[in-house]
Length: 192
Image (tube, rainbow, N blue to C red):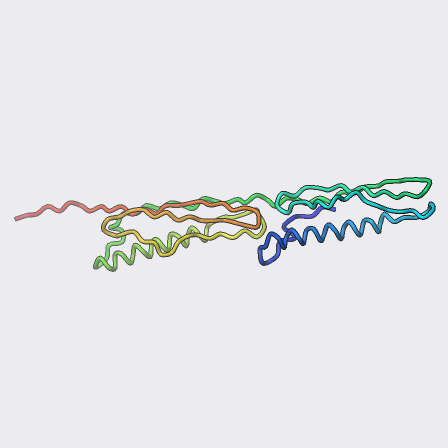
């Protein structure tokens, strides 16, 4: 039997629960195969298997080959089967896009409005990146970021860096992007 690890991922994204569900599935397979191998003929045949109690790791996957042995006082025969778990696929992600703006792009009637315009642009940049973030692999990966309304001062400019985190039951990856605001003003010449 071959199964995908992510089949056992539950809605709570709990690695212990997923591992336990995988182990239970293996146990059921082992019991079903033991019944299917059956025992017949001979004189009071006995059946045993060589499972050592070590389960396949949920995240890395792998295979266990079990050998069943049927014996009686005159004869011994064996047969085997393999239980395979396809590993959780590696997480993949696309990098968010950096952004650079000149402060005067947000100029409006007054400084308060200009600052609000800049803050809105930063939030829109984060939301656009979040929506465009391509995450794949893993088991039900989630993408979060550490944006909590960070701001750049309109008059002095500066940079903020936002970190996006993608994680699932087995892996966590992070990627960052920067939003930079440069202050630029044309020199004014005084005339008398």
